[in-house]
Image (cartoon, rainbow, N blue to C red):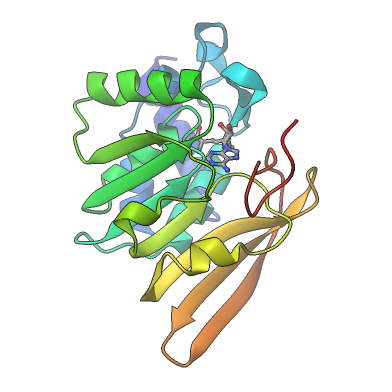
Amino acid sequence: MDMADARAKLIQQLTHEVRDQKVLEVMGRVPRELFVPASSHHLAYENIPLPIEMGQTISQPLIVGIMTEALELKENEKVLEVGTGSGYQAAILAELARWIVTVERHKKLAEGAKAVLALLGIKNVEIHLAEETLGWRKEAPYDAIMVTAGAPNVPQQLLDQLNVGGRLVVPVGSPFEQDLIKVVKRKSGLVSTNMGPCRFVPLIGEGGWQKE
Ligand code: SAH
């Protein structure tokens, strides 16, 4: 089976849990194999997370679909992603919103992601090396924020960087397992929903866990 067929088959599996056609269509176009190490190319379209460099992971496609759908993106919106990793999630977001700011604490991963996004001709993603403070305040507020690493609580620092009407999706729990929490920032206050269990590598630093 070639990569395109394998990708189509994976997207077909995701339709049971991801309903947003636009999200499925974009995931059906972005070549996940380019974001995983060469040794895992043959696994790129299995519905599983895969190891990337620096002991980190590229998320399972199903969770990418669920989290992307939860952001309810509109074409003209500005999005923050915390945890660039391979850059795969950022590439998906890039097709669904106007501007993506993504931050990563490992320089090697940030550089790798930059290279793959450039190769794909994606121009509306800005990748930054994470600083001491969580997120990227310089360009706040954002219409949507996605955290792709597990935090002990919903980080106040990120709620501060969210627009009114904005959506934040973040895994919250222990360093080993979390619940996916969605927070909508309404004029009248914050509305949170628990979208169910998930498993991410830990968010490190401010608003997260202590450095290794
Ligand atoms: N979204 C990624 C998967 C990310 S794995 C993808 O599509 O491949 C989580 C990433 O978050 C790791 O690369 C880790 O280094 C990074 N990370 C952890 N804490 C961070 C922080 N405080 N700021 C930015 N990145 C962080």
